[in-house]
Amino acid sequence: MQQNERIITLIEKYSADACTDSELQELEAWYAAYENNAPLSSLLDASARQELKGELLHSIRQEIARHTAAKPVTGRSRRLLLLSRAAAAVIITATVSWGVHQRMHPDVVTTGNGYTQISTARGETRQVVLPDSSKVWLNADSRIRYAAGFNASRREVFLDGEAFFDIHRDPARSFVVHTGKVTTQVLGTAFNVSSYPGSETLAVTVVQGKVRVAEGAAEMGVLLPDQQISYNRSTRKAIYQRTDAAATASWKEGWLVFREQSFREIAAALQRKFDISIDISDPALARCRFTASFAPGTDLPKVLNLLCRINHSNYQLKADSNKIIIKGKGCL
Image (cartoon, rainbow, N blue to C red; front, side, top):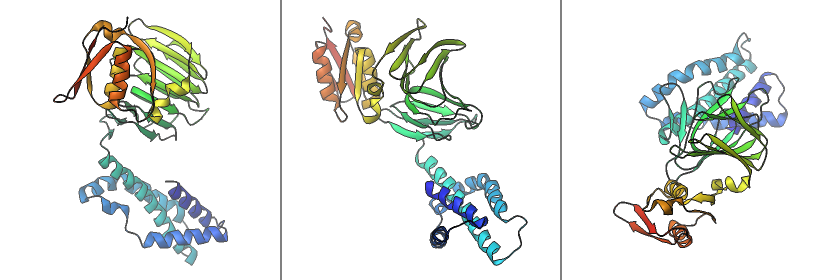
């Protein structure tokens, strides 16, 4: 994509007669290479190309017209027309590439109401870049969606699950993350939000910058780096605390970090990460709390062996159902 932007910039400089000799050589080399390569659209079948054609046609015509309107047809203008058409091809290539990506990645979909939704499956994490250049890392079994007008005056996303946000700073447009009735609002910062469906607790943790967290019109607080708000959906109470924000967000690098969490909460995290079902037989065992960290690449048996040893319990894998049963006395 950076290469596409570079070429369009050079074409604009060419049209203004502002290219240096080296830039002109770069542009000519690119155009020669462009003519000798098959278009990316050949990767799509006929029906897919037809589907994209209508969406692209208007923007392509605008791009060509922008460079050629009301200009005499001199030798330079002919060359500029060819380059403008090539620039339009850059737009086609980038957009068709997105179409190919959409077809290869069914976890990126456009919903009926015009929202783009990006999701991860159990056992999967991924990084995405939003239209405003903000970066989002999605943890396992998570979903984020945003409207077609996202990049307008207000940047809003809706999250189910856990995500780390590195927001592109823009003082004129706030960035808002919706998690049910709770909103997290920023201008430019890096923070983690954990809000899985079915979980009683929602947590917002700031790595850098400043965020405002609210439920409706009621403000919960403003967070600075290494500060966290945990909100209990049942009691509607928020707890403010200092924390190691980098450790909280270290799941992006594959770490498993638990701090004073119940065995039930930890089991839910393991189910998402390893795509397996875990059943804790005793409610008392499920309520046991402890702290532990596991380095990237640690396999499930090693994690379970340590957890069960700490909790005076044992586990059994039912291979036929991909299910783990955990039994024992629990914390003493």
